[in-house]
Length: 296
Image 1 (cartoon, rainbow, N blue to C red):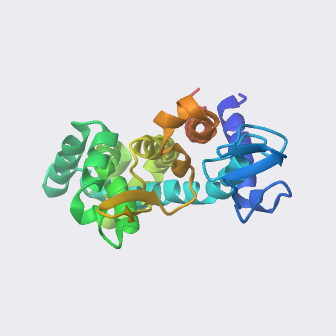
Image 2 (cartoon, rainbow, N blue to C red):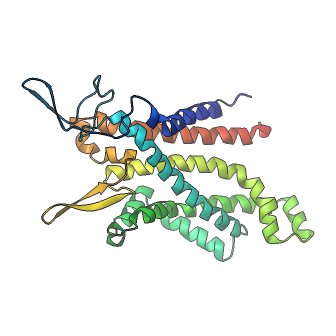
């Protein structure tokens, strides 16, 4: 049976990968991201950034006069690096934690349930924003690394709970009980019996989680919270938060104002974030159908 979800997901992922890896080398991309805030198109006429879509700027410019298309292509690498780094860290913690709590009782099971309940009580964007705005993190020199770790940790409980429940169901199967009967050690059981059986589900959820993280990064950017940011003094007694990366989030920081005066600035990065989330979710559903094809 043809798996349209997987085919469509691979095509979308291939397009995103192409522009992420090879995009900076395309002739129409300005790798130096030069900007001009003021231009003189003709004698006696002055134009100020942001510039609307034109022959010079196919999808417009940002407020610094930089080509928006070039910004999106150059920023794709940082954006996807942040997304996958967060999801990889999350699963590196959640997988062993979920498997250690497979009996659905004991210390590890309690940790998983507590972690899941603690952070599932509020919207993820609210909890993440609240933690990242703590003064101890806001002014921390290692904020970049802390931000990635915290965003990953917030949903470790949810992911490990899913893995734990799947492992617990497996523990009731006859082949697991047979392994215990013949004296297979617990660690060996986890590696050779549990993990191979839940691995397909982990892969599916990994890509779906990548889509969730992409949307979360966009949501945080709208409220001016970024993974890589610095507090810079712009005037006497006045400081402002600046994103130090060129990821897509930087273009959404003034979305509420830009949607009225220069809608193309937040529209295209938001569109790409939604497209990325759609790609990851489509890939996940396609892989789910692929792994479950023998059941259809």
